Length: 211
Image (cartoon, rainbow, N blue to C red):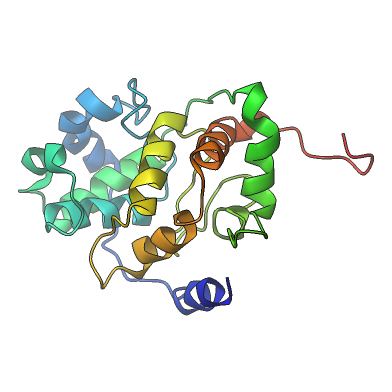
């Protein structure tokens, strides 16, 4: 736990990115629409929603795929010839779109809320809210993505991949952090917290009475 906190603090400084033009990005994003939707709201739950996602995060992840550091082979034909400016423009366009809300499974909310806001002290799982915020908005500029309203299927798949040790190379401390975080998550916890994040926009926060 202490090691993870230290790593998080070390990664806080912002990283310089190309400045994106959302107007230019709208046209450039046309080839992305088949999987991610014309406005960044993917119609298929295994592909992530990009609407409202921090432009710096979307741009960085896209560059990692283009440069062969993040393994998403189905994206290669679409990103292999994009310049850094193209990627920044597309990311800026998606950031300006509105994400469509999702719905959490009521049967999973209690456990999902616990993992997201408190973690699991017994197994050393830190709270997701520490990096992604209490409402799932992430931290712009620090590469901690927005997770609210994201498809639960996509989030669960990513967490299982992290738990299996998948990351974007030894130089990418962000994905290495997630490998460490997910290593102690059970399947039940992954499914619950992923569902909870999908419904964060309508989450009912605990009251002082414990309801």
